[in-house]
Image 1 (cartoon, rainbow, N blue to C red):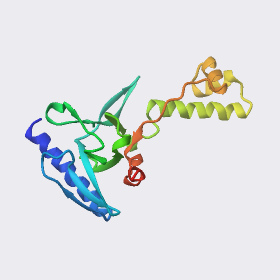
Image 2: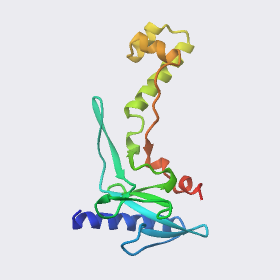
Image 3: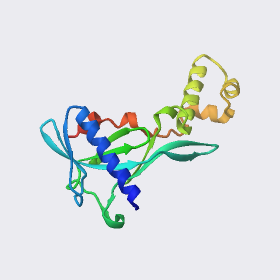
Amino acid sequence: MNNNDLMIGVAGEHLVCFDLISKGFTAFMTEQGLPYDLISDINGKLIEIQVKTTRTHSATAQRKNHYPSYTFNIRKCGKGGRSFYSSDDVDLFALACVDTRQIGYVAMRDMPSTISVRVDAFKGKYLNEVQEARSNKVLELKSQGVTNTEIGKIVGMDKSVVGKVVDGKSKKTDHGVYFSDLTLEKALCLY
């Protein structure tokens, strides 16, 4: 980690402090060496916040196209990332994106070790979202009495895949998370 990386991290801490203060909470940065970067008085409770910052998004491969996402490696801490945060160390993670000034909040107990956050401007363009929209169109057409062969031609699917969608046997995948999903209010529901 070079000095510029450290300054990006500090910028993220300032960004989160500003976000919390602008929402009406008291927030301040802590000293180095603690497992959390900020303390905030939120509704009368002191919340320990670890800030993770990224400069910008990176391309996520999705078959033919690459769509952007912000990747945060979360749970590791300490020199060389050999330790892990625990619920005794941190209450809340704040994910700061320097290029867009976006902040996402996630409670410690909900935080995976790595999280990819999708770019809101690309909502609906990620592969599983496109597939879900096509599946919904299949079901809509089927309810109108259109044959599987015709549906396949309309939506660009093989007839057998159309049949699986109609029969409810197609595989569904969870959508990724967006910054707009990671609100402070949702994260604080656990406290």
